[in-house]
Length: 500
Image (cartoon, rainbow, N blue to C red; front, side, top):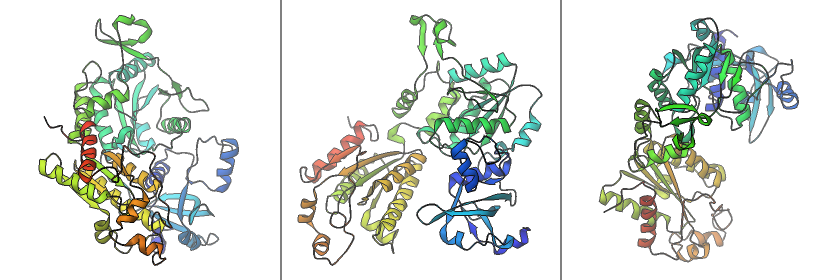
C-alpha cells in the first residue's frame, strides 16, 4: 500500500519485545522472515521446529493487538488490512499488512503479515552502532569472522577467551551487543555498551554492533536465535559459554574454563595451573556483592576502565535508588509505618525520599480508577512506574498501597530492577480481624453491610506475598518498633548508612 493511503490506517504501539522483533525483521537480521508469523507457520513451528516451507526457525516471532483493532480490519480488502506500527511516542515505524488474525487471550488477537519500514526509524542512544546486517557484512574483511554476543560486561577471563579464539582462527572479531532489554541485574543497554567499549583496548581488532535482541527466558532457544542472527551479520564462528548448538548457522565454539595464574598474572586453562597458584574467576554474585558494598573490583579480574563503568552504573547500595514497597490490608498500619520510615530518613538526611501513599496516589495519580482487578493492577503499575523513575535517579521511593495481587507486585519489582534500582517488598501482615477492629475509614463495616463491593479481605482476595524481604505485624509491634524493624533491615542490607 502506498504511504499516502496509510493516513487513514489504524495505528498501534507494540510492546517493547515486539518492537525489538520488528526492528530485527526490518533490518534483515531475521531473514528469511519478512513479517510476524501467522497461524500456519506457528503450528508448523510447534510441531516440527520449522516454518511451513521447511525453513528451520528457533522460536515464534509474534504480534498481538487489541481485539477492537483486529475486528476493524478487513483481511479480504488490501486497502483495509494495514496497521501502522509506532514507537512509544507515536512515531510511525512500519506498515503491517495483516493476512491472518485470531483470538489469543484477554481481549487480544494475534496477527500475522509482512512489514515494511516507514521513515528511517532510527532514534535513541548509540545509533551509530545499530547497523543492518547488510551494512555490517560490507564492513567485514574477507575470511573467518568470530562472533561474540556480549550480553554482560567483559572481564579479563572472557577477554582472554576471545583473544585466544580470534588468534587460533585467524578471524576478525564481531561483537554483538544485545540492547533489546535490560541485562542481568537490571544493567541497562546503554551501560552494557559503555562497558564493552571500555574493554575494547583489551580485544583484538573488532567491529561492534548493537542488536535489539531480547531474552525469551528459554536459554536453548535464545542461544539458537542468537546464532541465527549472528549468521545474518556474517559470523562464521560463534564463541559461546553455553551448550554446543547445531542446526545450521555459524559453528559454535565452547571454550574451556580459564583461571588466573598468580605466578605471572596470566589467564590460562584452569587445568594447566597448579591448584596452589590457581584463582578462579569471580561469579556474578561475587561481583554484585563487591559493587553493592562499594568495594572496587580487583584489577586481576576486571580491567579498570570496565570496573569504573560498572561502579558508576551500580554504585554502593547506600547511594543507589531503591523502591520500598509495603503491602497489606486496609488498616494494617502500612501507611503509618511508611510515614515513620520516611520521616526518620528525612530527619537524618541519609536518603532523598518520596512517599507514595495509597490514598494520595488514588487522588492525584489514579483519579477515576475503580476497584476492579484491571483498575487495581493499573493503579499499581502507575505507582511502580513513578517509584522506578524516582529510584532511577538515585532516590528512595516508599510505596504503601494495598496491592492485593502478586502479579502486579511482580510488575512493580521488575520496573525497579529494569531501572537499575533495588526493590524491598515489606509485607505488613496484620490479621484481618485486627484491621477490622481498627476500621478507621469505616470501609469494613460498609463492606460487611453490603454497601460497598470489592473490599479486599471481605469479597475480594488478598494474595499474601511469598517473596517479601521483610514481614511485620503491627498487632504484635508498636508503630515505633515496626519502623525500627524496617530501618534495621535497610541498614543491614546496605541501603541505609549505619550510624556509628
